[in-house]
Amino acid sequence: MIDPTARCPEWLVDRIINSGGSISFHKYMDLVLNDCENGFYSTGRLNIGKDGDFCTSPSLGNDFARLLAIQVVDWLLDLEKSGIKFELLSLVEIGPGEGTLARDLVLAIAELAPALITKIELVLVELNIGMRERQEKVVNNLDGVNYRWSNIEDLILRPVTGVVIANEVLDAFPVERLVFTENEVFRQGVTLRKINNEYFLEFVDLKLNSEIINFLKESKSLLNIDFPPKDICNRWITEWHCDLPSWFEKLSKVLINGSLLVVDYAMESNRYYNVMRKDGTLISYRNQEANPNVLKDAGLCDLTAHLCIESTINYALTNGWKFIGETRQGQALLALGLSSFLYSLQNPSTNNLSAALNRRESLLRLVDPMGLGEFRWLAFQKDNSDDLVLGNRFLKEPIS
Ligand SMILES: C[S@@+](CC[C@H](N)C(=O)[O-])C[C@H]1O[C@@H](n2cnc3c(N)ncnc32)[C@H](O)[C@@H]1O
Image (cartoon, rainbow, N blue to C red; front, side, top):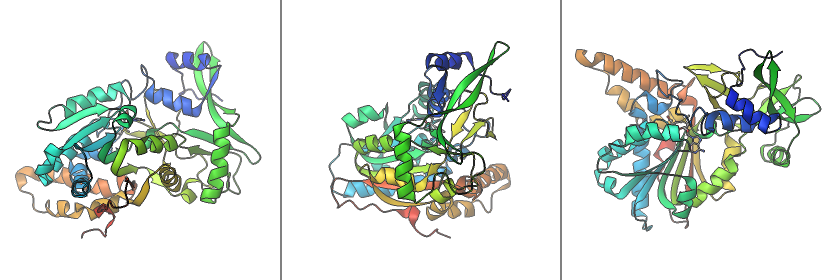
């Protein structure tokens, strides 16, 4: 049965026909998000925030940035006093979305450690022109701050020392989808079905390639996981973030000394590859609605897949990174002092009551264990000596 909501836009019909009639799910996800002329991100159609497609932590106000800045300042000051040579310390944000986190981090750093501002540069790494244009409008009036846009390839040519932040971007990297039946495993693909002169998208089972075969072999020994897990009924689908190893590799050439913080939807391998999770973690977002139908409204929705924590850490370790630690966002933000922000709102005057209530609601959303509070903070360090010691306040016991 064809899904009537999975109409294929004309541009994607051409891409699929030109690729021989079917494409891998990985290619599909890349096209619908990043295709230069039609992708959800590249056209700048994505709208982040309460009135947009979905909320991210920075889109709820500047408190996320103000708390994260406490950790970022610690790291920058540690690097400054480490004796390492640098021209400027770089604060690199990968996948800056609307640009609000980048802007609010710099403003918070200026408040927390004014002397740092002339010693740092903000580097925004954005793949998609439509999103970059939106970021330019938000970041362009940062007076007295060095800022620029760059890409990973250029940064590899002129590596930096500093802090790299990747907030809710790795979940948007295209994934391979793997389909298991009791006896066989396939690479999920996407193909076309023509009905009454109209094209629809549908899934198709493709043959595995050697990369996927290696992934299955390696993961089985690394994670001690059976693929598929025992007792699947009929079909069991999961994802592989196949672009992560090369991303960590490239990024290890970008950062000479410093830290990398990945904040994202993530879960442990035993939950990720659980028999109950029979459709994987992929989901689409549009107008604040989550939808498991990832072929619907192709190019008009965001697609996101969780990270597997152990696999992500392993990809980092095998590409030159040291693992600093991992925690849930709720814990991290409490450790950085979120409760003091809440206390400061206890006695609002009547004329700012509504603003105080909104801010309180946003702070609670940041730590909500059923929502953003469940996001994982995974921190890594890169150094060319063993002497670099970075303080990691976000991993400490929460301040009550
Ligand atoms: C879901 S948004 C996250 C936005 C932002 N970090 C936030 O938290 O609000 C993903 C962003 O990452 C960008 N992006 C996707 N893949 C990327 C890549 N490989 N390198 C850099 N940016 C990328 C998208 O264009 C978009 O701006």
